[in-house]
Image (cartoon, rainbow, N blue to C red; front, side):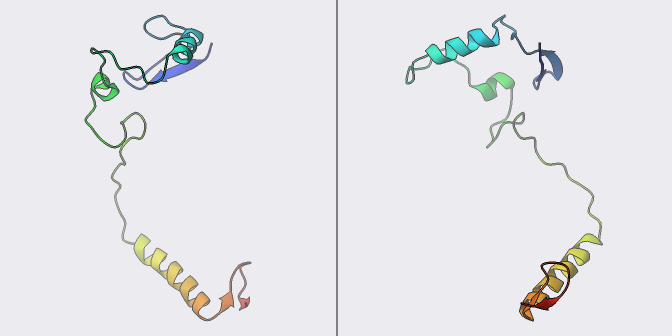
Length: 104
């Protein structure tokens, strides 16, 4: 049976059943038998509230926020030099497709 990672509590468990005891096949059958456009139950809880997450464009479990990295001073000049070199090559009408300069 395949294992599944639970993003809520960080555990790895059996992917065949969930906490309520439903198997994947039973959940699939329930989902396919549901009628679209049926109103939600009055006691339905939004997923973000259920998982205890702050509102945002995407939930944390789908796409975590970016991590801050220490920036070094050498990256910007190196990148700008490479981009500038390609712009100069283009401005002179030269072709650098295969690594050697030649007339286009």
